[in-house]
Image (cartoon, rainbow, N blue to C red):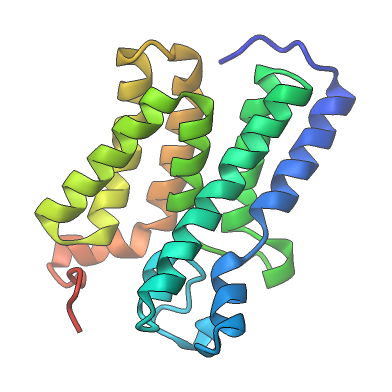
Length: 201
């Protein structure tokens, strides 16, 4: 955890900015703009990349992944540039919270995986790359998007310590706990062997 060097007032400001950026529901907006229907009526009703892919548009899913990851990264990078590392971590945390619990959607947002990866890349890029690689490898081996997300998140505190960014480990652990909470239904289906595989109809 970084030293607290930014004033409480500015930290509150960066928390609000981070939440605002994170709460932009790109998946929902893209599917509407691209004429793919109401994402809330498709698949799980989730606003994230996996559910956008269920519309049949790989382009929309790729854009959602990039934009959801980008908003986490932008929150971190702007806060770091304008304030400091403590503000950057807080802005990243709140961007993640904004994605998962957007006020505009009655706090029913996504599961936060893309935003998590984006902010980890911005906080410590070697850690972010390691998490992305772990996510991809776990998803490929299990053929389950949710398994990739869970393993990728779980690896983040370990990678933070191993790759020389221990000040990120506590935030990574907190975000991992939220990712697991948001995936509780997926975890139950994995245990029962009913979790859908990638490409399965």
